[in-house]
Image 1 (cartoon, one colour):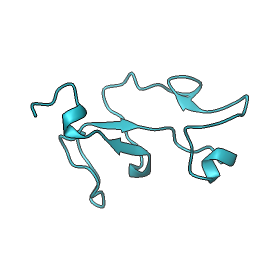
Image 2 (cartoon, rainbow, N blue to C red):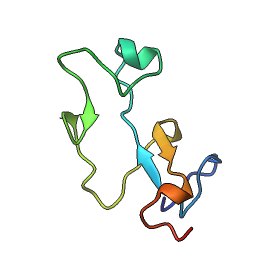
Image 3 (cartoon, rainbow, N blue to C red):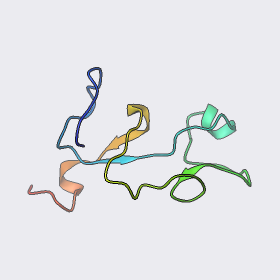
Length: 78
């Protein structure tokens, strides 16, 4: 994590994070499982209908960010 907004308390600069798929107003999105679908057309960065993650920086809502526990990071010194 490079930087966070002033109201973000769940992560801080220096944390390792993973971004999930933002919702697209479909059934699974509405019930809070936006990484699931049975639809033929779905939206997922780097796979279909959304730009990928091959950028140096990425901005997203904290709702779609998952903090990686320090011991699980391949760069962890713990």
